[in-house]
Image (cartoon, rainbow, N blue to C red; front, side):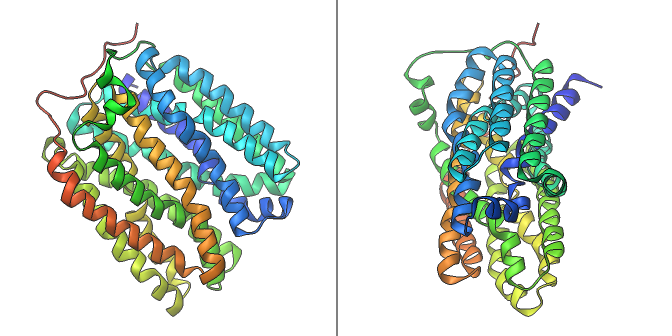
Length: 403
């Protein structure tokens, strides 16, 4: 197996293990709610904990990857992530459980930053979209694995066993990825332009963050409350679980497809692809309430269309952030973009939960359509003219090979 392929496989595996909790936790939402006596808003807050921990650590993790290379950061992060999930398995209260998940999220921040930066370094521009799509497949793949494995573990040993199993998997895969990751830093520079504020001054970067912020509100709301919406429409727990698994499988495939589309024109279609993702999301989420009302089982099929739009943006967003920033700031740029995605996505769950408690589950689809429409406008009006991908000069050059 080539080094490129090995890095890609382990980047996917480590992300999938981390995402078993960050995106698979709703699969044992009922067990967690029963264990800690939580309502929809309370579970939304607990579900937000891992994302908030990651959001706090992604920018520092990106700076450390730029400065020291991915290997050491993955080792430290993998251990912290695993320890956090093991502590969550022993938690006796919702507050302790959430605090442990925050710690796990802090450690897990190393996985997406190191993975995305590694792919930016080793793949050429016209192949990066596809590679990043495969890496981002790890996110819904982890959710799918979580939907299958976490309930089975919970049935055997409760929430305790489910969280402990996820912790072991997260630590093991991060350490395996560390063995093949670049042990040397990128071409690191210092100065005002290299700071986080300097990253925000990169042409096109603020519109890119705005698109990510808006799109992930839709993604987070749908992810956290999709099972609840199906159950509220009259579907059984088994059918809802199958729908959740189908949602994650479709999300995985969509990221590969959208990545391939973004590679068009030698890698010049990134911003246009983000716009098209938003348009599809608006159409699908506007129709979802009518599908649920007309024939709830049909929502299992139509959920595929929803997922293909709302869950497809991450890889293209991260790819464009690293390409705009250049080699000395790619880790920090990816960290900033990831912070927006993780942080805002985490807030989407309790916000949507609050609206659901007052107006019903249609709030999920109304909220998602509105923010996706706004994101598509930003991508078309402000991001597309500013986002220039220099394919001939190769803005994100491959770093010096590891020793």
